[in-house]
Amino acid sequence: MKVLIIGSGGREHAIAWKVAQSPKVDKIYCAPGNAGIAEYAQCVDIKAMEFEKLAAFAKENAIDLTVVGMDDPLVGGVVDVFEKEGLRVFGPRKNAAILEGSKAFSKDLMKKYNIPTAAYENFEDAEAALAYLREKAEFPIVLKADGLALGKGVLICSTLEEAEEGVKTIMLDKKFGSAGNTLVVEEFMTGREVSVLSFVDGKTIKTMTSAQDHKRAKDGDQGLNTGGMGTFSPSPFYTKEVDDFCEKYIYQATVDAMASEGREFKGIIFFGLMLTEKGPKVLEYNARFGDPEAQVVIPRLKNDIVEVFEACVDGRLDEIDLQFEDNAAVCVVLASDGYPVSYEKGFPIEGLETFKDKDGYYVFHAGTAFKDGRIVTNGGRVLGVTAKGTDLKEARANAYKAVEWISFDNKYMRNDIGKAIDEA
Image (tube, rainbow, N blue to C red):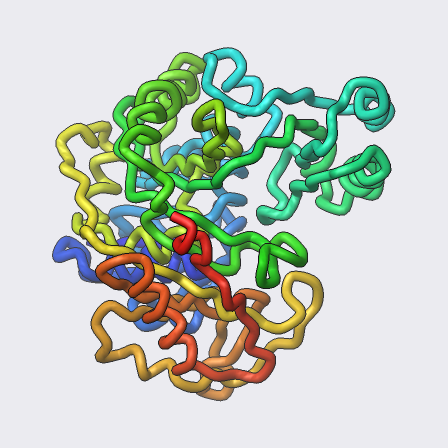
């Protein structure tokens, strides 16, 4: 088989690494890819949003399966473009990717089908949002830009003043662009956050192992929201009881709800859950692998990932026995100092070859490029260093040992990824 992967981050590197292990695959392409992905795939200079060019490339090169890693192309309808050309593609169509593309849509869906989530109101008018906040809201409260905002369009406001400023930021100043045309005002929930990824074939859903992300830039969950500074898997807080509840009231219910709406979902549903005192509730849905969650979940997957992708496309996921290793993994993101605001790039990266012969240690490239034959930094999040262990504590110790093997100017990381493990 020939496989094309769309994307350029750590998630796509993890996917490419796993696809490369499939005996069914003899050639991998990645558009646009990065310096790390180039080890497994031929990188193609086509951007993820150039749908027609991507489909033309897939036809010309007789690609057997395309895997879409990123949210923007999915929400934009890349799958529809590929299907129209008769190409096999893994990921939800545009009318299903709206599950991630519009928070207002997903909240309305959950309300309609009684899927547990926080109370909320949607607003398209800033004045109406402000009036609601002044007259009815209880603080703290959460403001969310409706559309895609690189995982950063969520503001937690403790006071009315902060909330008024938040409405201005999202709806009037359009800090997140058109993502802020509609605003979701949501009840603030407290509890543990857990991420659960799943494969879906339109009717059957099979969940993967759980994970937990760390969104804030600095230690102690301080600083600005990022795309994710590190993650661990599995979550010790995701118990059998939680899983049973979610199976019954959340996972299958979401797949059935989408089917009932005429929006058959095939691909990955990422459930962002909050384990509240009143039970698990859905914080958000994503329509693709999380990043960096993919970097701790995929290395623990025992199956041939290409077989699973194909089963989802063909509607026969029920035939797959999805299995994960009985161990743990921790990923620490090495970022450029100054991320997520402003940072320099183009610095040479040393030590990548150290990972070559080490079993259970991985370095996934997020923002790297080739310059004069060397691999250099080329983004805010540069690398995801992942290590396995028999349990979470060992995996964390291994991951923090492995980050020392890598050096580049302005290297920055959090030193407390997985701190919650000690509280479990």
